[in-house]
Structures are given as C-alpha cells and as structure tokens.
Image (spheres, rainbow, N blue to C red):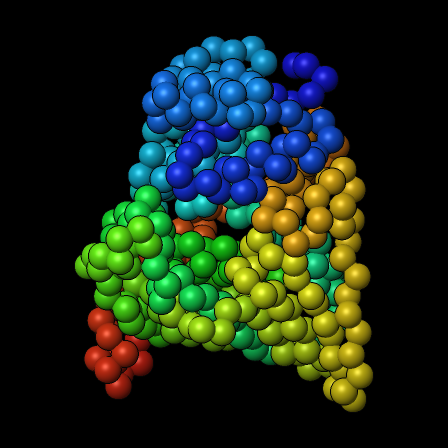
Length: 375
C-alpha cells in the first residue's frame, strides 16, 4: 500500500453529499487522498475529472482495478448500496458506505456477514455522528459517573425539509421505498448517537410514524408531487436500559436538535442548530445545584483541517479512524462497523413495525404496545 490511503468515491452528482462532505474531508485529512471518482455516466465522469483533477469513469470496475485505490466510499442512493459495497468487499477493498447501509435488515445483514468473511479489511458504515468530539467527551463523562446513574433521556430533531420546495433531483425522497425518510436518516443517525452515549438499544414500547405533509414541492417548477414517505416520528423506547422519548420532525419551522440525559446527580444536554450528525455540537452538564459546565471536545481536530461546523468534519474523523484501524493504531471498533449497522437497522425496523399499528396520530390505540428488539 502507498504511503497515503487512496480512496475512490462512488457518486458525484446532483445529490452532492459527496461534494459537501466526503471530498472536503479527504482533502483535509492527513494520510488519505482522493484517487478516483465513479459517476453515473461518461459525461458526468468527464466533468468530475476536470473539476477534481483525478481519474473518473462511469465504471466501478475501473476503480476496483486501480492499484492506487485501497478504499471505496459509497455515497449514491440507498437502493444501490448493497451491490456496490458487496462488489468492493469481494474485490479486496476497504469500505466506507454511507448510512443506511442497506434498504432493510436482510440487505444489511448480508453485507455484515460478507464483511465477517474478510477480517483483513476495514468496512465502515457512515454513522459518523458517534465520532463527534462532543459525543466522545459526553460518553467519557457518563462513563466516569459525572451525571450519576442515568435515569431517562429525550431526543429531538426538528427540520424544515418537508415544508420548503426542494430540487427536482431530490424528488425520489418522497417515496417510502427510497429508505431516506425521517426514520431512516434522522432516526438512524441520531439514535445511534444516543446508543454511543447510553448503550445498546432495547425494546420499543410505542411508535407513531406519519406524513404530516403528503406532497413534495418541486423547487424549479412549483409542482406538487404525491408523497408517502413519513416526515414525523414520536416514539418511546429503551436504550442502555433507560426510557428514551424520541420526537423527530421534518415539518418544523424551528430547526435544531437536542439530546438530553437526566441522571441522579446531573443532566447532560447536547444541542445543535441542524442535524446532529453533521453539525457543531455543544455539550453542557448541569448539576443538581444548578451550576453548569460545558464539556471540552476530546481530540477535536487532530489530523483534520476543517472548521468544526463543516458538514465534512465528522466524516474526516471517520477517515482518520479508518486509517488508524487499518494500521492497527486503534481498535477496529473505533469506527462504526457493518455489525453496528445491523443493530441500528433492527431498531428502526422495530419502530416501523410498531408504528404500522397506528397509521396517523389520531389512530393511536389506547392499548400499550411493545416490540422487542432481537439483537
């Protein structure tokens, strides 16, 4: 392997998450470099090659055959994740696949099983929010007993996405089948951050998942397209053995996120102005006497040359940790593995299955319901 870890990024185009996060992260992280790009067409490949100055093509095989590529990053739509990730693993490459890893538990488990057959490789899912320095600092504080025994927790993520017109190329997100809705995206990322703080997920006791706005407005034309993807979730579940109340919404005019954990000695509050997995966070502990202390982020920017509020900051930390895991400098579980993706997909499926019993807020049953999470 060369002195730097060569990365092929699959997916450079209209969705732009690679351009917003992955490509800046690669440019700003010591020891990794962009080696190739894979796009959807020869035309887009030509544009990408000119823009980024690295070889680009519409063929994944070209990237897999390139000895300069050791890691493949997958940033395309969820429906294409399994095929690309499976091909990259079988080709002997390390993998960084964006979340969700698969469209369902079966796809996710299949990739995790394949990963287990290749222990010489590092395979990571894009749950990079758990790597945020403030989350690491908060986790250390909880483990050290700073808030006492955790008693209960609250998770809130409020976004305006469902209220504002959006570009035509994102219209596919209006379909539940796209696996890119308030549960699968905001739920997956934020709940995994809660798991990083509290421990493994347990039973789901109550869940309501619904579409408050049943149309998607096309930015370019003003056209309204029917939407069946859910944009709101209210749930009650357990993480780390304590009750957690969850409220996620894509139909809020007041954007922001908060993770609150109440303990016997103090409370912990982690806040962000946007989605917590790619926002600058602020973590504050408030003691029972009312005094507060802001936690200092751990290892905030070692090897990462991006501002803390950049969308690629936590992605850059993931690349840094992948590099460290490959070199054996840090444990393999210092990055979110494909097994972690299975656990989180199981949790989301449990929430969705329970929510199907109450299609709208007004249809909630008065009888308690519960779905155990099989881990």
